[in-house]
Image (cartoon, rainbow, N blue to C red; front, side, top):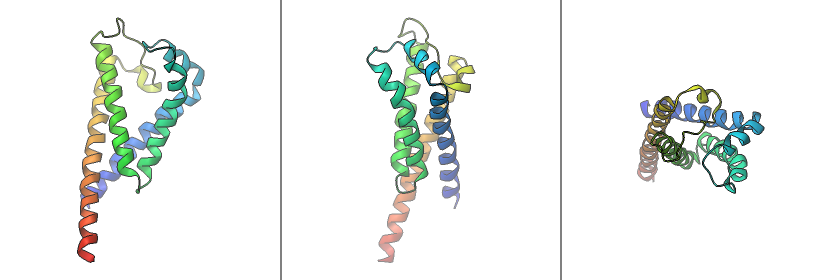
Length: 148
């Protein structure tokens, strides 16, 4: 019972995060593209990221929402959060020569250290979600085996 509650809370938080992230990019699509152009990224990657990030973020939210694909969505969320967290760590560490803009709606109001704390928090939330979902899946599988 407790596990189900925490899986639900984690999934709701992650769905809100990914839908918000995607919708904010789509609503301010031109500004998002301009912000991407300021990032230390290869020029060929900008159009891919401009369209791809919102699509991937919405896809992750949908995967998490659907109980049959939830584990895949939680794993995808974990990978995205690790990637975004590493990007912030590299930016703070001076790997890009300058600190680029943060490009994330309300989250852009955070300073880079706040952004790092936010990302680490959601990385941990995603990891806990994966672990709980795996345990929940094992429990479900074990119950199925016992019934047969």
